Image 1 (cartoon, one colour):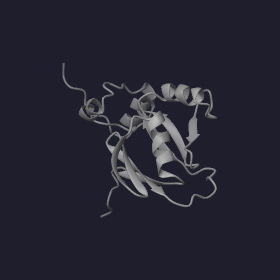
Image 2: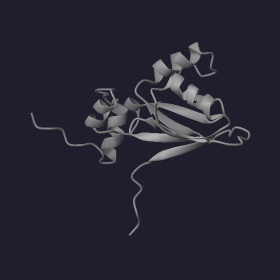
Image 3: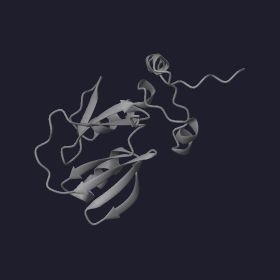
Image 4: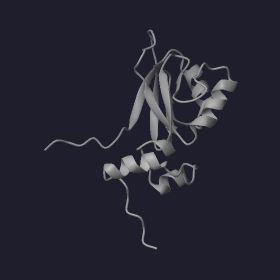
Length: 150
């Protein structure tokens, strides 16, 4: 029997300067420091986390990226543009952190990624209804909880 992967616990990113990375992530995302050592830090993003590891950073990858789910992609886009970051003004939203790690930002409402309502409330984001397209994709995979009876 094959083991089924059920999700990601965390992603580890290499950064050139840990303090710079923590400042940048804290500027654009509501993150909480989970722990820190001299060359590593862990920041909570919802109910998962990112590990930041200080080290020698090479050339940025062209295609490799991490997809981060946010409660409102357009609010983040506006903040990135206001900060002078080079990002598309519409459509796909990709941005590089100060060390060159590429982040693809996706809106929770538009993707198959789901969280229990109790988790969303605990994260302080409240109700985030899915778009019809996301609901259709979830239904096709049998990943929608049945609606409660009226």
